[in-house]
Length: 274
Figure: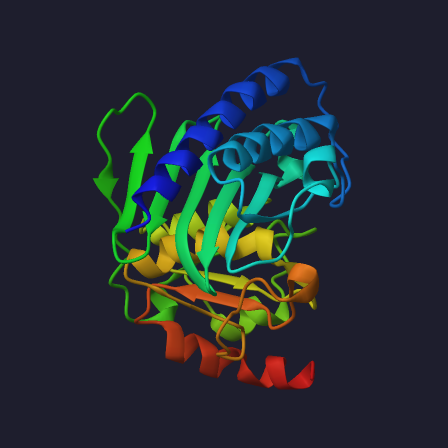
């Protein structure tokens, strides 16, 4: 199921990554890049992905982050919907620390059918299809290998991945509530969701008031197909393709075994924000 969509998505991402590696090589680093930075590379990569996918599936709808010419001429809502983040973690691209990804997802009648997260600079590719599992293909590997979440059952042994903090020595109230053994930080949500799916982290938490479908959709299915769980930070189901492509319930991704305990730990903080 979704074999044709996966093949087209992987093809589009391969083309995008090829362009992005060249752009990254030539890019002049911006050490103090702001969190909301966007670059010409974001727009170029989005055009590459959109033009390829629209050529294969001209009747589908497309939701993407950048306001590019191809998106302006596309249908943006529909039962068959592609959700695209051309560079997730543009700050990592601008700072040239490698912490960014290309994210492509396909949603069929509110069900995530495929998700692809590619990290072009470090040569990591993680992808999943509904009912088909989660897979990784890294560096020069020609054959994919399956991904599986960890079997850690205790939060005090868990590794939490989160967005880069201003001062890593001062953990947030959320981290203090979870009390993980270790924290890994990255600019890219796609990278962090892939870490959980690959079994390299146990938890990922987003506490922002609002973000967008393209920030998490592709990574969401990676985690669930690898055996984990993904909900809002209050345990809500996450729905894609709504008006504005907005997500307003935060996100908790886990290996599944830690999910209920993590929700319980952060529940007072979630309640305090509503």
